[in-house]
Length: 341
Image (cartoon, rainbow, N blue to C red):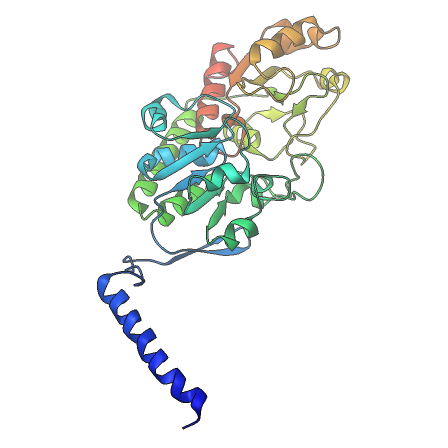
């Protein structure tokens, strides 16, 4: 037997013995598999593998956070970030137990301090270059990620908030809820939440009969306002209630359009984002209305002269489950103005 081989034999015996001891004591042993896992979810062109039910989940946008909270997952959330509005009242208690990592976008390092085992976001930009971190960066650390499918189906390659070739639908939102429920192994809760939202949408649309009413949706910014194009979350509300969006001729999600053009289209009703964040000018509805009523172009508009303002949260104007709240609130506003039966 060559000398080098005779040296390796006892060393190999020692290694194997140590390995056996570690296994018998529980150290170094593989974690037991959880029934039904791993799960694989197709998400935005990637196959995401979830090895076990998440216990330290992070939601990087309010839309993702509120879905998790509504599914009763607060005790399995390690943090949330990027909020435009107060949390839904019915979710306040659950949300109070979840750390707020940042009001806006947190750093990658801050997220990693929570030791996440799952990260979700509402927007491609949040988990892309210039966002918190890329999906690849999280993946290299063994952290699975999920992006709202409603944002992936639009073209995000250019500047701004993307362009939709196909309108957003509530089916996209319901699909996200069911995906998150599957990932956390709470499918029954997901089905119940979807059924509740479907019933609310049905009631809101059946109770409101609109005839030839035009609308404009203003999200933020006074100098160069972000106004809704045809096919995002406001498009769902518009279609559901039979309204006419004065900018339904653009498929850009939130194009910036000058006020002279807005005045020319002269909508009957203004749906105004009432945001609590402070990253643009005229975030709060109060500031938006103050601008509209003092600006020499906008103060002559029909909706402004008649004070036909309907205030919505930012989340109701984003692809989120709050579209249902937005539909209910716009329907109520139209009835108040005598524009819906």
